[in-house]
Length: 278
Image 1 (cartoon, rainbow, N blue to C red):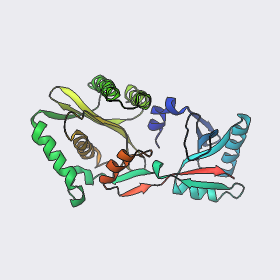
Image 2: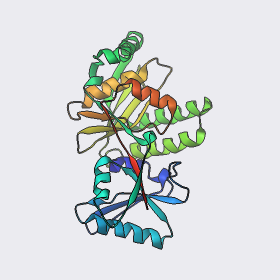
Image 3: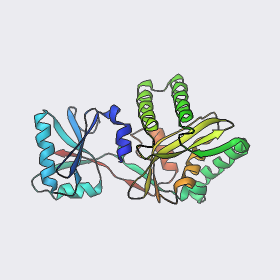
Image 4: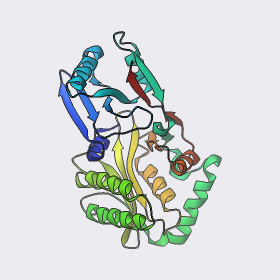
């Protein structure tokens, strides 16, 4: 989870961030998940290099004053191990595959060369056969970011008209535009794909300290066959020299999204847990 990602989704999840005595504290007042009882408030495990027990004390004290029942969200294997070493607290860890993140070798997307990705390779070839003479790829920058935002708004309108969930799409749209409006400040990077003179797709995100590119948003006009696979290939070609892995985040339990992400053959899944105080 990057700061840029947290910022983009801050309104949707009611994110609040504080710093105290060398620790960063994050809570999300509007996050609601079916794997934990209703009424609980999501906190991230405090981030810092000091005494974790003291930081957890601060979370518990703050939650008690706010009359909240806290739990830790997005706990990785690393932070799970750290929590288990704090003897003063005990937790019940719940793994939910809906929130595990899909991690891929970026190089595998450069040309989809492996036999396991042959369908994706053929799909890109079909895209280029259909539109190749008109296709161009540019970095998202001040010169085209207004056009990217215009495309995103058009994408939203079109998909709402297709009877998709307007509430979730509008929430996602707010997050996407929040990132685009603060693109440089957040240190975001991405590409815009044009066909002819119009932008028909884009992807953007940020490179995490561990060397993974976290794709925060990726959209394409499905009137152009196989455009999503082409966007992913061009994104990998742009960033794979600087990011060994591509993080396509979680599928949040959506079966179609899970099938799609699985077809790209992840290198591994980044497991996430919920930690309830017991």
